[in-house]
Image (tube, rainbow, N blue to C red):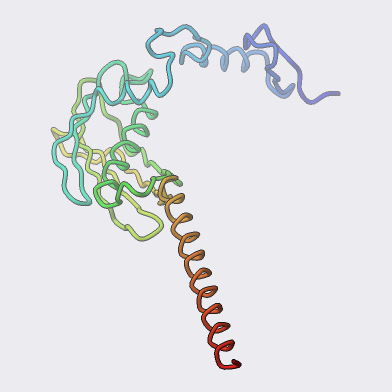
Length: 214
C-alpha cells in the first residue's frame, strides 16, 4: 500500500500529499491551524506584491539612534504590520531587522570596494516583544578580517532592558565586479609590460652581439 495519499479537499491543494499514518481528525486540526495562520490567504495588498517589499515594510519601523565604528544602535517599534498571530513581534521581522542592522554595522568597517554576502544567521528567541513595545537593537562587530566579518545583535525591551532575542551574523567579503575587472586589467597590463620589456632587452642583446661579431 502506498505510504502517502493525496487529500486536496483538506489542504486545498492538488499537490498536497499526506501520510496515511495521520488520522482524519489530526489532518483537520493541522489544516485549521494553517488556515488561522494565513497560509492559504494568497490575496494581499498590491503594494506588497513587489521585489523586496518585506524589507520596505520592516524598515518603516526602525529608527537609528547611534552609529559608531563597529557599533550601531536602533529602536524598533512593534506595530501591527510586523506582529504575529499571538500579538508579539514576528519572528520573520526579527530576522529581517537583524540582517539589516548587522549589514549596516559591518559596513562601518568593511569598505565599499567589497560586497557583503550573508553566509550564516542564527537567532535565539528568549522571550517576546508585545504590541506597541519599543525594542532597543544593538549591533557590534566582534570580528572582522580580510575575508569575513562576524556581527552580534541583541534585542532588549526599552522599558525593562530585558534581553529577548540574540542574533549572530557572518558576512563573507566579496570583491566588487568592477574591482575584479580592474585587477584583471592591471595584471594583464603588468604581464604585457613585463613581456615587452623582455622583448626589448632581447633585441638589445641581439644588436650588441651583432656589433661584436662585426
